[in-house]
Amino acid sequence: MRTLLLVLVILSSAVSAQAATMIELTPTDVGSSSASLFSTLPTADPGLFGLTGADVRGVDFDFFLGGAPIASGTALSNEFAAIGVEMNSIVVSNNVFEGPASAPNTTIFDSGHIFNFTVPVVAVGLINTSPDKDRVQLWSGANGTGTLLLDFTDQDGIPTNFHVDRFVGGREAGGGLIGSMLVFNETGNLELDELIFEVSAVPVPAAVWLFGSALGLLGWIRRRKS
Image 1 (cartoon, helix red, strand yellow):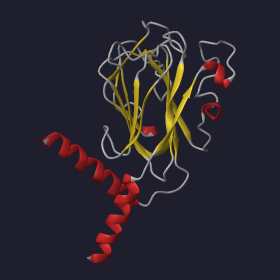
Image 2: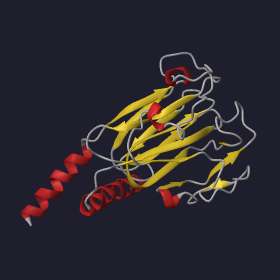
Image 3: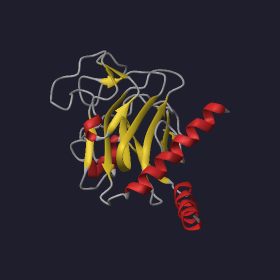
């Protein structure tokens, strides 16, 4: 019993020590021909955006996994579960403020986006096509539970520019994993495009994965009760 408790304490300490490094890029940062739009997209060259692993997966909000086009007005939830990401009924639209980086759709849903990962993710990012200091958070558990790994707003410390695309996200930096990515906009719609995420190349022991998920669930239950 003491041995089990020691293992749980060690695992708990490892989870609580997790952190992530921020990724925030503009088109000129990755050599785009345009100063405001990404001419090279993350799904085309993830390495330019800091995702360099052998297993990088993507969603461009224009096509389902089988290649069928996604109609404007569609709400996405588990349509991309087969590649390891689920969403909180995120609506896509072809009628957006700045236009999509990858035509025709971006997301357009102002209550906050949740991307839950069911595979071991070590880095994630997406294009914000009309940034206005939107908040980005990475969590160790699903639905914004567990340990908060990263919390920042785009364009922090500089004047807001709605007309320059930003690629926002992060990479884990403490031996942990990213369980969910949350993006919030308090003043308008979230127009996001081209989600990519890097899956860990290191197999994660089932016990560790389950324990981390359990911690996230316990945190969610505690917050619901408080």
